[in-house]
Structure formats: structure tokens, C-alpha cells
Image (cartoon, rainbow, N blue to C red):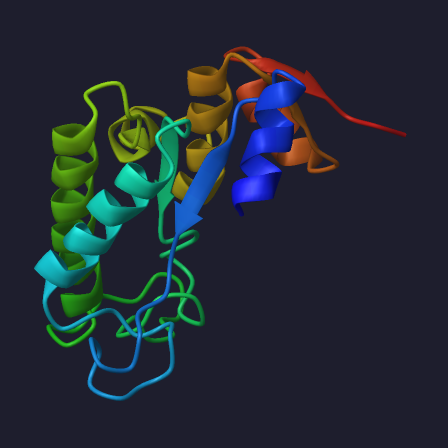
Length: 166
């Protein structure tokens, strides 16, 4: 990782690191997609990562947490059906995880950027929350989104620069 970050900086590229997964000691002996039992453990890890990689200013917390196979205790949910109290635990756990990690990243360096969920929520009428995270990140990086997803390109095209390769 150190070499990759050095090379990116040498070529004037901005680096975004995604923090995801929990070690078995933190999540009750389960596989990495299970969230840690204590959000403070993940927050401490985020701060340690920010300390280790001071050149990195952009952070993503647990990519695609809305997909059950990426973030547990999230479970499969048929579209259009109400969630149960058990299923409601996952978004709440992710919110606590994000809140703690964001606080520690900002405490380590105020210029760290990890607040994409707020922007994604603002874009909820334009595209899915999943796609809105990419749009928000593209905005934050002042970049161009390259996608073959025609629906995303239509929704995001009025907000950011979008390229759809042939």
C-alpha cells in the first residue's frame, strides 16, 4: 500500500482508501463482512489508518453496505416489503460504524473527507442510494464518472460529468 500511494502521488493522482471488513477478534469470530461488535474498534482502526497514510484525504467506509453479502448483519430483503426489527439493526449498526469512523478520521486530520452519505441522501430522488455514493464521490473528487450504466448516466448527467464508453 505504501508503494502504491507513493506512486500515485508522484503522478499527481488522488488516492481514496476504502476501509472494510472486521477481524475475527472484533466481530465474534465471524468472516470479515460481519461488522465489529463495538463500533469504537472500527473507529480506532480508521484513525490508525489515517495516521499511517497521511497523504490520503479521501476515505470510504465499508463499500456497498446496502448489499447483504458485503455488510452483515444485513439480510436479504424482498423489494417492497417492510423490514423487521431484526433487519433494521444493520442500517443502525452501519450508521454507528460510519459515525465513529468519520469522527476519528476528522479528529486525526480535519481535511479528511468521508461524508458521502449526506450527499447521497440529498441525491435520493435522482438515483439509487448505491449510485448516489458514486456520484457524491465523483463530485468530491471533482472527477468524471465513467460508466456503462445508462440509467446512472441519465440520472447523474445533470450533476456531474459522465462518460459512457462504447
